[in-house]
Image (cartoon, rainbow, N blue to C red):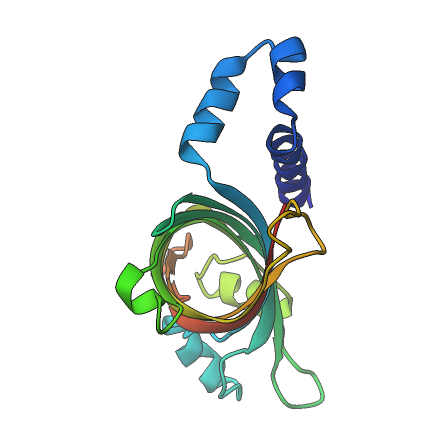
Length: 238
């Protein structure tokens, strides 16, 4: 929750900067340097909401799950909220936060259960090939970030008794590569300032998440969170 509050505060601050009238800036702004940097390096700012379907591989943990009757890795939806900044027509940057949670349960009268919760925060660069984009609005990107992972449930207690410590794996770096296509664009009238509600871009994106977590117990257990997330997003300028 605190990550979401930080993102919303940043969006509020940036929104105030981007909508400031030039005359207001000259009269009241005590830091014109910030506005100069913003005007020189940021063409547009957008807010994007996306929902991904994400299925991690789990690595060594998947073998443990299969031994107790859980054969399929978890699949769950991962909503994300992003601030997208366009620097030049070919290049965007994106600050993204997401949330993913899934629960697995073994069969039987006394089932074992484990709940995995992931909170990824990342910074990504998006590149549009100009000549290709005129005919096919496709883009490519890569990013790096941190991921907060937490595991809970009675299965975690059982694993810790066996020497695998995975109850709280902390935060660590994560890599991303992705490609997407803009399916639809709705633009405001040329004489209308872009704001939330009068413009939208719908995208579909394929994102590869690269992450391995090492457990803290006496026995080594690598939890591989590598997986492909497929998502549908809506982006609007403000």
